[in-house]
Structure formats: C-alpha cells, structure tokens
Amino acid sequence: MVDFDVVDLPEADHVAEGERAPEFTRPLVGAEYWTDTALSDLDGPVALVFFPMDGAFPATYVWNEIRDREWGVDEDLTVVGVSISTPYEHKTFVEERGIRYELFSDPSAEIGDRYGAVQDLDGMTGVREHRPAVFLLDEDRTVEYAWVADQWPDFPDYDEVEAHIDNL
Image (cartoon, rainbow, N blue to C red; front, side, top):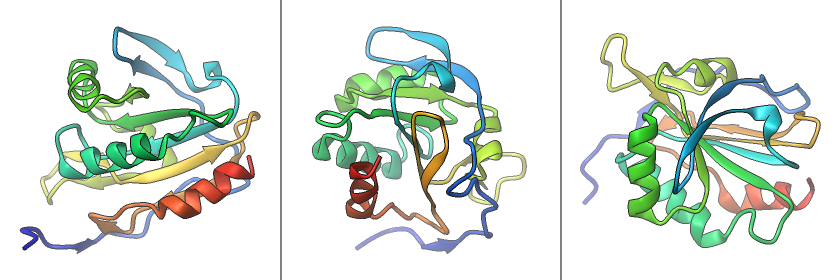
C-alpha cells in the first residue's frame, strides 16, 4: 500500500510552448566534476527535467525511467536535470543511481521560479522544491513542449514526451 497522500498543487504559471526559455547559469554536476554552466552553453536541443530533491522517491523514479528509456542516447538531444540539491548531493545521487546525465544545482529554487516549476515543500514555510516538470527546448532555446506537475507526486507521460523529442 502506498504510504502518502496525493496533493493538488496550486496552478503553475510556467514557461509555455513557443516562449523563449529563461537563461541561467548554475553548477552542472556530472559523474566526475561540476562546473558553472549556462543553459546556452549546452549543445543542440535540450530536455530540461525539473525534479524534487535527490533522495526523494520521485527523483529516483524520474531518473530511472529516463535512464531506462535512454533519452538522448540515439537522438541529438542533451538531457539535463534541475533540482534544489547541492552539487555534493547531486554527485552522490549520480554515482549511486548510475545516472549518465548531468544535473544543475539550484538550492535557491531561482531557476524553478523562473520556469514556474516550484512548490512549497510539505507546507513548510520558506522551504521550496521543484515540481516534476519537463521542458523540451529547440536549438534556439524556444520551448517546444512543456509539462509541469499539478499534483504531488505526479510524473510526465514519458511516451508523450518521447513523441515530442522525435519532433525536435
């Protein structure tokens, strides 16, 4: 039996399809190191995947699904994550989960705010995390697909996202 409640989240005023993706620079964490990286530094189309903090079951579920579906392996697509976790937490998460993707660290949730993908964490005042969200960006950083969770927990329709990846 599942031991959590599904919670409706307030409506998200998120970046929409056809809009230009907000630029940002944050630490981008891989298996070996991290470095401050701008969104505009990434090559080709980008799948920008927002997820709750490392260690939360939704984070594990999202990245296991993306890993198993091999997003970006056969496509000209850069897949990156964004969460409130620190670079140190990301490095551990990448190593423990065998994730071959890089993850942006956004502890202030500022990037999440700019994309409209933030929620209060369990009703704790001043503590926020990213909602699960997927933004597919073309090479010019125009949003071609946008999905933001309206419940916690909620997950993207991975088949639908893949259909949009095929059209990038």
